[in-house]
Length: 284
Image (cartoon, rainbow, N blue to C red; front, side):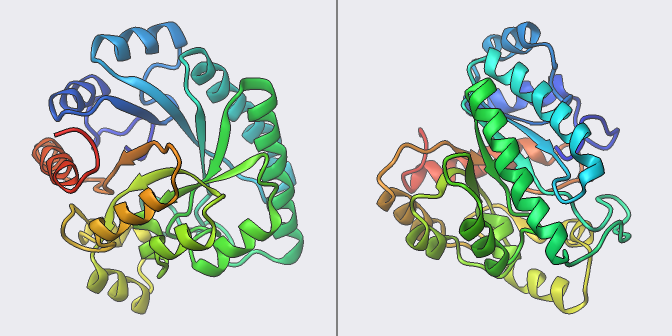
């Protein structure tokens, strides 16, 4: 789910039942407000469907001083709710410089030095708040059409942020979309990988999207996010790289399909979970 509310998305009650019937049992709640914000109600509905909540998610602007108050308020709300239900992580999704629905530019594609330095400062600041006040580890999430997309962007983040307060969500699909290699990231920065979103992208469509300067939403509508074993990364090699990290990791199964036919996600999710289980990730 991309938005807390959107008529093109599946209703949260239906989605919860479908996730349960697809065989999943670990939950990242996605955009704050899609599932109930009240921690008592959230825990009740998750318990009813057999889910353990491990993370919440939020979009937050870090590179603009005037946006800090709103970002802090949102993440404190996410932190309070998710700490109360026993979660361990909060995923920070970077603001996109193109609108998620229209693809129109809404910000600068490249941050100047001042904005980048503020981004780093506020990432450390937000991570410290999440850890000290709520006991949650904040993980930064790479994303298409954002300022954390390419291997160079990710390297700059790792070099500049404080590892005590800022972790990294290895979103394998978005790393491929940014022309990176998630297995290489595991080998180069094993200490920074603390949480995983596992998904795949179709390389020819990714190439086409970049060559024609498509916004990310257009690439998604064209079908660039695919169900493994299709696409990249090679899931067998990825699972080996994750195993080599030799640490406990939550691996959340995702696929970007905003605007798809509402009948598609359930059989697709079952197929994906069963395939990943067949190669050693998750329960059969």
